[in-house]
Length: 450
Ligand SMILES: Cc1cc2nc3c(=O)[nH]c(=O)nc-3n(C[C@H](O)[C@H](O)[C@H](O)COP(=O)(O)O)c2cc1C
Image (cartoon, rainbow, N blue to C red):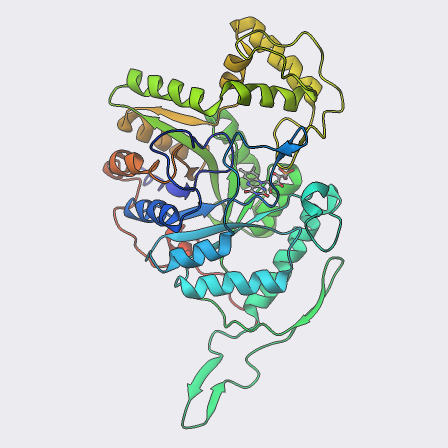
């Protein structure tokens, strides 16, 4: 008998604070009103998604000394939004991105345990590790973390959070009126932790949550990031959505699990992806072309070029060729906050020149060509088939997907692609369990050590 097909896992990301979110479209709604978050979360729940997902940005991006206002700017805080969504959804997981560099374990463990209670076991924490000084200047530590330390801090952070989540015995609350006892004697441990990053003695105030430990997601790509995920996380949010790149990432990360006593199924690999649908493939491609032009405006193309070149290029024509001047070697500084292409601008510029020359592309054409996200483009059947090919081909376990429009960008996917996946028997038609751990097939959290 052949093996049963792997089940596809899906997260629904609220469109981000980046140029992939098309805010200029007349159909685009509020980025801030609760009704937008509610619409998207409920749509994803109607589609039986595993979870709804919010990213986090802690500092507004600046470009050439000004707030970068070509993309969406500004977002409400993640945890209150997810807490409010817990009240208007029943089953879907609620995943929030929160930084391990600038927060404290006691506060964060308490907040996620609370979300887990409010949602009946649907909380997930996406642990991110951005450590740049620009963002760090927001915080009372006044500084930031050496980049090399970002995962040692994250690992110690998660270790402490787990001790805090385990501090209440599962049966701590007895509420026995006859005996006059509310909490069992000795059932709430004091957590004492002395490490390089944290030195605390704490007795958590929130009882153990329904999931024990909220689901942990990790977003990061380096070797250290992969190792941290293999040791610690339940899922990875990755950028490797192309089939070949996905396969090699998948093999690499799943191959790291055994040494931590973990099985391949314990860590789900979920690349980010987007989609464009049409009644025919040609219509979908035409729509995708239109969306890319909405995402990369003429000014946006110049701004992205300036990020790589590290200098003012406002005098160049976006519909003309690449600048004849070379990038400044030290491009860091023209854009502050989360920006792409900062690592090796000279190499990026070389590659961009080669592509522009080979394909005879203007500045804007090149940026459109090279800065898109992985997109599934086609009819609903084609998109479902491609998603399934990635999952069955061990390039991933599913995707965290986002549409281009807030908040209705996912409607079409839920109405047309989800039924195609269900028809192929690779995606649930109903939720089997009640918790996010159930949806992801993770089994219970490690039992409390108490
Ligand atoms: C797919 C993906 C999504 C991410 N989302 C966020 C985010 O929402 N907020 C944030 O501060 N950092 C985010 N990050 C940044 C990571 O936490 C991390 O700082 C960065 O990837 C550097 O770590 P690395 O060297 O291991 O890749 C994301 C990273 C990836 C790969």
